[in-house]
Length: 143
Image 1 (cartoon, one colour):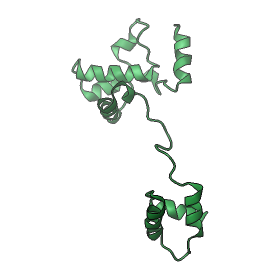
Image 2 (cartoon, one colour; image 1 turned 30 degrees about the vertical axis):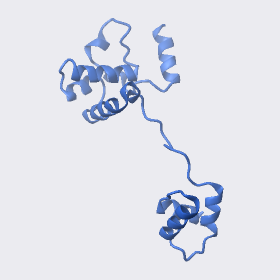
Image 3 (cartoon, rainbow, N blue to C red; image 1 turned 90 degrees about the horizontal axis):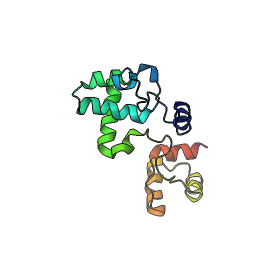
Image 4 (tube, rainbow, N blue to C red; image 1 turned 120 degrees about the vertical axis):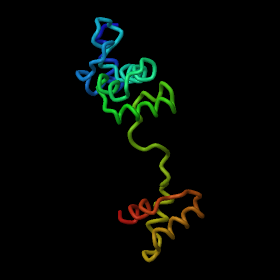
């Protein structure tokens, strides 16, 4: 696989390192084509390896791999929880299913104006078996 096709593949999957020019770790500066500074997952993995296996400080490993010390700890935590999948960025947007069905929205909108949001949260839980946040109820009623 050529470097160009590798780059295109990473770009298509959203896996390009945000600052490849900041990656100054020796592995990525060598002539070995396997180590590719544009590969965000590989760079994160090698950053963790540099710290945990080679004994580099967390700040040093982060700096030479184009990340901040804080980002290092986030990556390390994610890796410890999820393994290699933890090196992928978390999906943006909604994390779970939407609780507001059309039936629940209709219930909230037709409720008496004097009914408070916390009371509607309780009523929705009893009636539909879903737990809504007070702010969610308030947003639905404003529309």
